Image: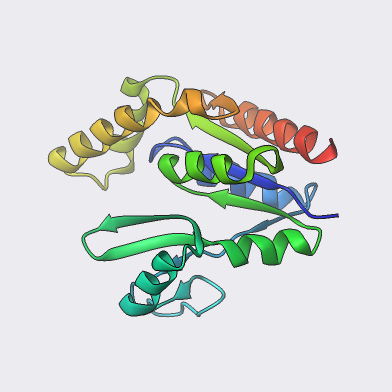
Length: 189
């Protein structure tokens, strides 16, 4: 039986990666991460087919033209990231479930493409003020970049109603447990 597709999206700073890693580390759910494709060069220690599928600009644009992506985004001018359909199929055709850690627009697109084979989960901050506080606490943002990230987060939060389920991360352990339960319920039915 083909595996299912779990989509998790959230604005930056909402704990999405932390929640996903906590669930994966328990080993309770048969899920594999989808390896994303990018046209950026590998960083030191990164390997093709392990960290990313590293494609040339021409290869990435060719895959876009061939409609080979379930979703892709031009994150910065000329810098693309995306999820290849064949990567999702590689995992699910082997009977494993795939988890996609993708931006909100990509999450909506993947859900539209796969319908009932996919469950889309949106991780929300308790409030925009709390999100701003979390981002400030990281200490990695300038005042301008912080304002930009918070503005982007507010725009992304507007997509939340288009997701199957929303989880508010006001308590990390609770958010991990709730997200895990949602995934287990979906996989078992």
